[in-house]
Each structure stands twice: as C-alpha cells, then as structure tokens.
Image 1 (cartoon, helix red, strand yellow):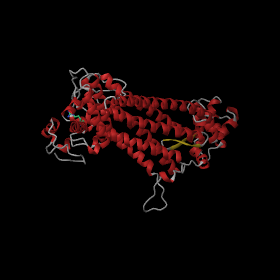
Image 2 (cartoon, rainbow, N blue to C red):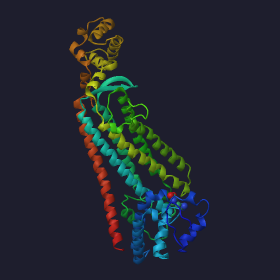
Image 3 (spheres, rainbow, N blue to C red):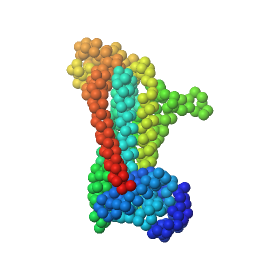
Length: 493
Ligand code: ARG
C-alpha cells in the first residue's frame, strides 16, 4: 500500500478491511476517490461518533464490554496521534477503522457493526458544522455588540443619508450603524434557526435501510448532543439540505457585510469616515494612497459564499436516493463559505468600529444637495398644505441657486399666491432647513431622532441578550453531552 498526504501505511495487517480497500481503491483513481486529506475537518467529529456508537453497542449487548474498552482505548491513541498519523484510506472513516483494527486486531472490526459510512459521514458533518455555526454566531453577536456601542456613542452625529448614491436626507452615524446591526440580527436568527435542523442525528440509519441489530438511536443522539433524529434512514443518508440552508444563511450574511463594506468605501471616498491605518493599505507606487482594501475584500468575498451556495446546489441537484459519492463534494462548499464569512465578519466590523467619524465635516456635508427639502415639505404639510402641494413648493425653491428661507418664501408666493406667514410658522420652516433639526424632527418609530434611536438601541440590546443566551444554551448542551460521553467512555477504558 502506498502512502499519500503524510499518512502512515496500514502495514501488513492482512485483515479484511485492508484487503477490501486494496481491491476497490488501490488503482489509478485512488487519490481521486479519497477525501482523507479534506476529512481532517471532521477527524474529531468522527472520533466522537465512533465513541458514542461503541458505547451504545456495548450497552445494547451487541459488542462485549472488553472489546468496547479495547476499541475505545484505540480511539484515544488515534486521537493523540492526530489525523496526519492515520493510515491511508478512502476517507477518515475507513482510515480510523483501519487504525483501530491495527491496534486491536480483528475484534476492532466490530466497531462498524450496525452502521455504514453513509450515516457516519452525515453525522460527522452535522457534528462539525454545528460547532462552526456556533462560532460564526458568536462572531456575529460580538460584532453586533460592538456596533451598538459605537451607534450609542454617535446617536447625535449627524451625517448625510443617501438614496441612489445622491444626498437624500440627513441622518446620524448611529442610525446608519443600527440599520446594519438590525440586518445582522436577522442573519443571526437565520443561523440559529438552521442550527436546529443541523443538530439532528442520522446515526444508526446504516447504509439507508436500517439494521437488524437492536440499536438505540436515541442514545447515540443524546451522547452526541443532538436534539433529535433524522428518523427515516434513507433520508438520513441522503439529506444535505442542512448544508444548503446554512450556506444560504451564510451567503445572506456575506451580502449584508458587502453592503456595509461598500458604504464604508464610499464614505471614505467622500471624507465622511477615516478608516484606521490597520484596516487600510497603500499603493506600491503612489505614496499618498490610503485605500480601503480590507473592506473591498469583504465586498469581494461575497463571491466565495455565493459560489459555495451555487456549487453546493449544483452538486445536490437531481441526486437520487440514497447515498451517491457526489455527496463527498458537498461539504467543502459549506466549509469554505463559513470560513470566508467568519473572517469577513471580523474584519468588516473591526474596520467599522475602529474608524473615526469627523463630526464637523459630517455636519457640514449633512445639508448638501438641499437634503433638508423633505423636512421643509413635511413642515408645510403639517401646517395644513396637501403634501403634494408642499412638495411642489419646495421643489421650486430647490431649483434656485440658494434654496434657503427666502427661496421658500418666493416659491410659496409663486405657487400659492400667498405669503409664507399665511401658510406656516416661518420659524419652524427655517429650523427644518438645519440638518440637526431635520434629524431631530424625524422621531417616528425607527427614525433617526436621537431619542427615538435610544429607544431602538434598548430593544436591540434586549434582542442581542436573547441571542447571547440562545448561543450559551446551545454551547452548554453540547458541553454537557461531551462530558457525559467522556464519562461513559471512561467506564470501559
Ligand atoms: N467519504 C465519503 C463521503 O464523504 C464517505 C461515505 C462513503 N460511502 C460510500 N458508500 N462510498 O461522503
């Protein structure tokens, strides 16, 4: 047997596992068939799945306690030696089984009783993905916490707000930040929701058709911290929709981040924000340049997740029941997507929370492009004019070189044949021309008025607390299962 990827040869053990492997996967396609190298990601998960399965087999009297102890001891040694010490094999499942048989002898072959690699790999992927999903949720939750802090500090920092990239209405840095925190809260909710469907156990479904052995699937599910079963054995071996929804949630998150990154790039370009040096890059030729490269990469990395989602769906499309080897190519799309977006979240939020917001320049720019026009029209309408009429009056004022109070006065006269004082409170109109007042007057729920924003911040923090405890609950229940499994294993070892 030849080695590859730094794995030790299985040696001349002559057991059935080795013979089978040489018969079916020793040819020119050996490397093509093998997922062993990529399976490093599920090495720890596979050991946990093996342990839970062996404990259950012993409890059910399917494997003797002594054999169970020997297998479990071998698994400990294999864990200590690490993935790179595994013998060659088609995948991590086969390699670990070979390594067990190498240590225990043919009795080690009892480990694979009443299961298949089909239910095994599906279980391993779920075990690993739920950890990655929780890590990502933690990253997003921490990002939101930091964003809310910066938003609270800038609840009165007036800045221009844009639609179609044109100045639209003044808002605040806090309001802008909260808009992204709200989106990230929904991204978190989607990840927490998908977690519930990742965290179901297909183990014990065997190849797809169950087993005559009197196994206890609930027991292995509990030992592995799953919250239930994928009951139908054929479904359990086939289903990868949990990968689809996780990758879709991840792609949604990446899309949120791409907008945040793009806003930061355009704000930096307009001088609305000063990105910290550690999140910027320079040019190799133009010494004066400070470019927002980290944020451009966040924007660009959206391609990684979108590609992952496309790749995954294309791999899965039209696959017949139950197991087909195409499935070996499914996991990497999800792994790449989740790794990419985890890094993007950290960098995007790092860049945002370390940035400086030049308050004077922002206040100056907040009124550019007659951005207070809507507030003036609103005040005229509040004084009794139909909104459309008010809109026309202000539009006329906006066509002049200096659309201030005089221009509005002229426009009222031209459009309505009345003086401004007859139709509205002149002081209120003048005040509405000021960006600070323009922000303050928009105090409807969800608006940028500082008090309104503060009330929103309270609700956002409550929502964040709930997500933090949902995360902690899930982590606790995985940790509890892990320690139960450890102590069950100890009774045999
Ligand atoms: N390496 C395979 C995978 O990742 C494991 C399952 C192999 N099963 C089989 N029937 N060939 O999907």
